[in-house]
Image 1: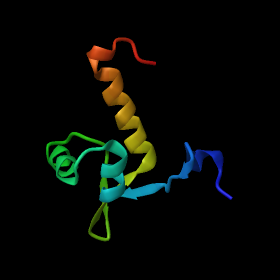
Image 2 (image 1 turned 90 degrees about the horizontal axis):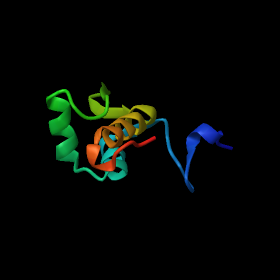
Image 3 (image 1 turned 180 degrees about the vertical axis):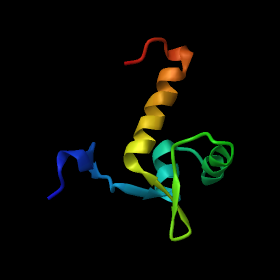
Image 4 (image 1 turned 90 degrees about the vertical axis):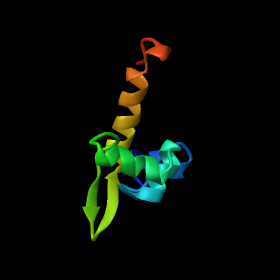
Length: 77
């Protein structure tokens, strides 16, 4: 059974995401994520066994920060 920290909506989220999972969640292309990484932007990432990986918490934090920094939405909590 999964802990509440592993649930997001109606589907289970693993702790570590690959590039495909991160692209799907953020609705950004894999190339956009690669480009952001190359210039020090985007969610924090690391290499594991030569493959790009992201901690779920880092992606969720980055999405929240992006939303909060978008002035078009005003004061976002």
